Length: 487
Image (cartoon, rainbow, N blue to C red; front, side, top):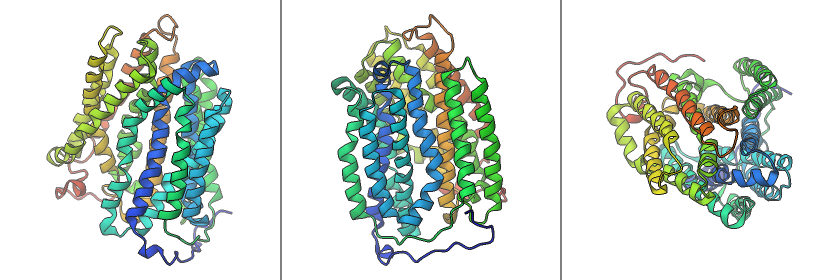
């Protein structure tokens, strides 16, 4: 039953050992499960053409496997905190990590695309409980003065996993076949379950009332929006049903927003939306900028392998060069942002990133691979400042008690932009362009230019940020104090 607006939450005291727990151990565990989740999301990219051949479908149809993962993990993301508090975080995390391993085994043995999508959905359900539950424990046991230190440890895999994922997927697919990219999860999930039992403190379950109406509205809205986007990308010649799904999803999203604003203890607190910087990064300019990034995650592996005839391993090397370029700039970003400020860094950095992404359309099959790799390295450097700047700015003004809701809201925004990017990438590839063959580079080039053009629109939205946006992070005193904007 839904919780009345004026009823208090019923809770129990946390476990006795929680106040004395070492937050570093929890941070290491969160880092491990985040690495596992992100690796699984990136390792599949270079295996898509081989999987499509085995399933007997077009390579662009494999976008449903990525979308199903996004759809289920996003729909159940708002439930993660409630389940963890109700059943106990250590128990939930252990079971979800083991379930992730079982789902990976099912993915590796999939005989058809339908079976694979179902297995990916189960995998996504487990993934939706892994990192959020770990973060919940970390935030709960970490003293405020050590929070930045612990978050630096726990978020490191977000930089490492995307770097090794594509080349690892390419080499495994080439050497052992695409099922091997899922089988590598089996020993990792066993290690993760053991770490969860040993490193997480015991936190007593709490008696919480469940906001059933809020969950149904949020899950239904997100599922319809993401599925509608996927179907539009897969079948651009029949847009009516996808548009209807997205229309209904939008109506439900408005209803969910109004419901959560009215509830005192709704499933997802909306307090963080009062901050302009948070809104801009999670649902404004930041969302628009993330769309081409996720679209390229689908387009580039197919472009390199099908249009240029490169092997999965070599396509993985090009994506590795791209991510290494991103990492090469990371040590200097803090200094850059302090010098130029967040607004200038995001405006100039995003413009450079979109121009660099569009330049990939100029690649040709006759271009030496080493030159492609060098270009991809430079293109990765161009995206480093805007992406790191967005992550820092999103939570710059969010108060400590607003972090749990802000984490969920930001994750939902990321998932929606990812679904939109993948859908648009598939849509451009499925348009009747060129000679209709998968090896024709024209559809890929159109997709690259169109996605980059969409991302360029975010530059004009970033210009609307205050000049002193993120002053708390850069250490500069804000020139003007703006009153908080109510969501």
